[in-house]
Image 1 (cartoon, helix red, strand yellow):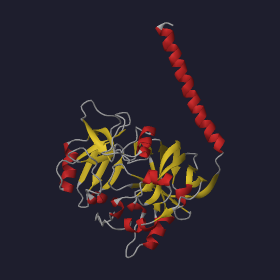
Image 2 (tube, rainbow, N blue to C red):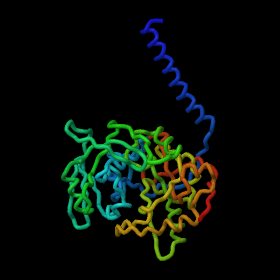
Image 3 (cartoon, rainbow, N blue to C red):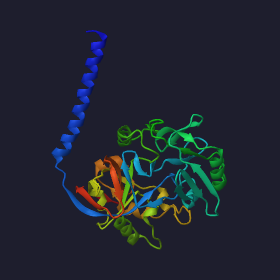
Image 4 (cartoon, rainbow, N blue to C red):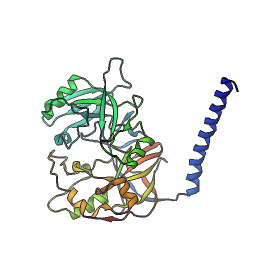
Length: 341
């Protein structure tokens, strides 16, 4: 067989294989015969242009496989890194929660509580002279565009921390790679293989929490209340029972967009940071969640690692719009079992 014919044969085989995979996915979807029932209403939508800073409450946006998109910008398109290129989160800088974020056209404006402002251009693509820097997000490594010395000085001054820099994500810049410091977890590797171009979210494209879940947690807290802002979801759902979202396998919105439940959302110390004061309390609500919201089933524990959970992390099955007030429909499965320490 000549080289040219061999190349054509291989290309044809790959094409047939690809069609077969797509067809198989479609058949699996049809074979499941998913039944959607109304489970709630979209109460609020939050868009976080800069990871770790205040979110912007919006009325509508788009579900994409890379995350929540508003006016062409993806959720968590910007983040802060330290002098080693590692994500600078509210764990290290709790007062980041007090930085206000606004968008006007192609300008991102960040304002401190004292009124100091930083304007950052929202570019459509990296420039020829932009500096590309290596970054680490939890267990992933990637690369991003450095936003310049003016932005770096602004954040270094505000946090009183040398070496901090603002960086920007671009979908076509580079894939994220799962490179844990240690053994790592097979489930986290699966997540990254399935969506290597994810922006600066920790694990999944979307984060959904129900309002009744937060209210039920508040009923168990003493001398303290929290809001959904402690958990930083994209989608807040109301008109459902507490923790009902745990059992929603697939979630469909009025436009027809569909997201799928990939994992219960494991909670960390950032939930103890007061979004109104920027004070990391360390204990609550995490201590209370540990008493009753730790999964007990092995398959779920494989994903959460025994951490307390609230809300769900979701991927996108079908892109489309999502709007406050939308009815929420779900293919409902069994409720995961919980225990506590």
